[in-house]
Length: 540
Ligand code: ADP
Image (spheres, rainbow, N blue to C red):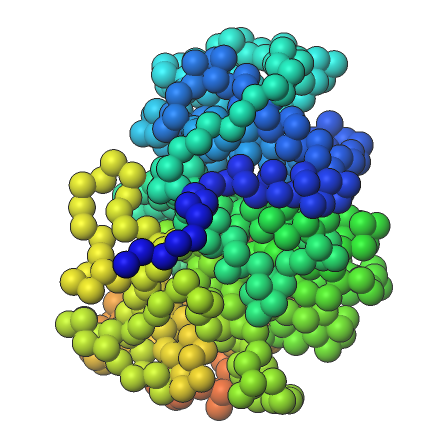
């Protein structure tokens, strides 16, 4: 027997319609790419998104077609997403920090028909245009006055293009499982892989992501996503903020410590989200300049492991609660969040931070398990580590145009991460399976060693890689970058680490370098680092 409730497909346009109705005057503030701070609201965003959709349809864009955006976090970028999905098309986010060849590969693989971009990226696209024969039109997210002279095919200023529509448009109704968004993982090895979100997966994911034990987004929240819209589906914030009616502050192109601090401070932001590198820059800026952020209640950090020293500094020195989150593009992306539960809420001191450094527990809509190499489930004891596998309505079941099964026999996706889960359900990433150091048949977590090393007062950044060893198979090499103006010796770091980890986990050597390579999403690029140390031999 079926229930007798209404059929109300979970479509993305319902989010912006709701925001325009219930939170019409709620502000969306942008540090525009042209320079000035601009202000709009959800009613205006919805109206302009309708124009985007109307204009795209007139352009010949059909349901399922891909429209790329390569742009900073701005109101224009946001309304473009709603316009694209409202026309039944698929927003494809391109990360401008990728190598140009990778951008061309991705745009061709996605068969983008239109690219919407900022003035910043016009030169980059001009250099690539020849390799993008299928792109019919470039829309530059600016007005006529700021439109650069360009030879890009059919290039037009966004505002001029929008003025050709009146917004008298009805959203295209597609079914809730229709594709809505496309985001490629950076693919440090092999080609990037496309993750194709649906309307339904995005709506469900945003509901789960907004909750009080997740990002805590409500109508009195002011949220600033430092995480770009082009990185892992904007961690849902492009959907969660309008869905819940939060004030949204878009930082545009300026993501250095001073600029982020200025936006957080002047707009009285209460919640913000980004990767550890961004927060380390902000922390250094605040410490150096003696700044505070009295309105900021919650700082969400994910994408890479958050160092304990950083979590403690924000919480203890500045009274800002740090929420450690884990996820991946394939998960829309949120997989776990480090909120407190009844069993952890009263913890204090070291015991509290022992929980806070973990990546947290899975919200409803995410199922999680750890297994050995034979798919046998491992215990939740906080010690045993294994392959982390996930399932849920916002987890990928296949990659776009890749004919390969990516799920196990029980329908779980192998995240490629290695983790423990404790008796309270808190998961902790030990490593990426390809980065874990295999020593004498046991595993050493490179992340644990890195986090410990950055606790040393003179160390700015640390990376650990496995070096081939005749007896132990692999042994850890610690590579460090000293803080600006400081020097640090091998012995000082090793002495600092002594006693804080098992003896056999101690790095065999420390190398001090000026810089550690990073990927396009700001993570330590271990592939490149391993290449740099290909000829290195451990002492003895
Ligand atoms: P990409 O692989 O393209 O850089 P993703 O965001 O999809 O982008 O990367 C997901 C991976 O990032 C995870 O599988 C995990 O290895 C790592 N990661 C994400 N958040 C954390 C975290 N809080 N701690 C440790 N690793 C993390």
